[in-house]
Length: 230
Image (cartoon, rainbow, N blue to C red; front, side, top):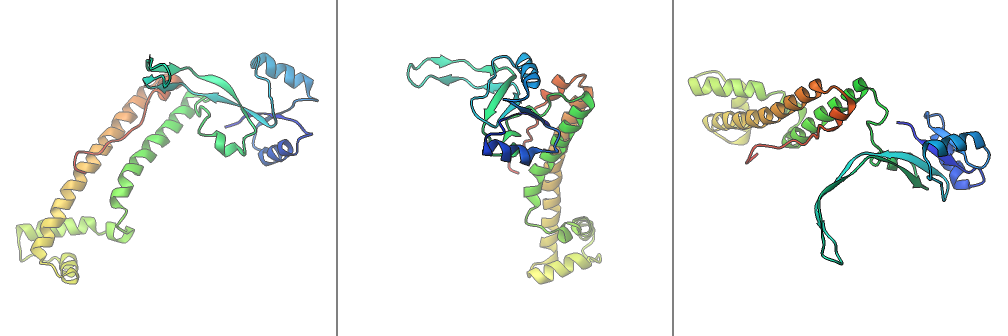
């Protein structure tokens, strides 16, 4: 994303900030020397004068404010939405601290907005599932299908060859029958969890595919849940 940075070359802090942001596609306006750019900026953002430098213009998204109680009067303040608006951030330490404040969808095309939302949908799904398999290494996870196949085979025929389960059971000091039962139960639990999350992901994807404008994309609030007991 790109920002409008209001700069004063007489300020060491402003010079350092601008130097760190150069070459990244931002619009840098020298407040006291670039009168034409300043005039255009004030036409686009009336009343938004910098009181310190550097100052950065960001686009705040709609913000839902929950119902609250005034701490002095006790008056109940209904839930409401603060509409999207421009805001001037004075003397940020760096651009990275602005990213959570800025509306990431502002100025995007529909295709760009969908790509951004699709990444969020996928990343959050993985973020929900990843902690559930965090204790297992990639090599062990790669054995899960074989463990399940052998567990099913053993359940159907206790004489079936189950080399992987046998090795695991021996190292663990556990009966193969008990291990096979545990593997099947774990598989059922994992399928329930992943199915729950994948179903939600596909529902979000359906909404995304149906979105006809950027505003519709933005309304898709991605928040995954896990089945009870997971």
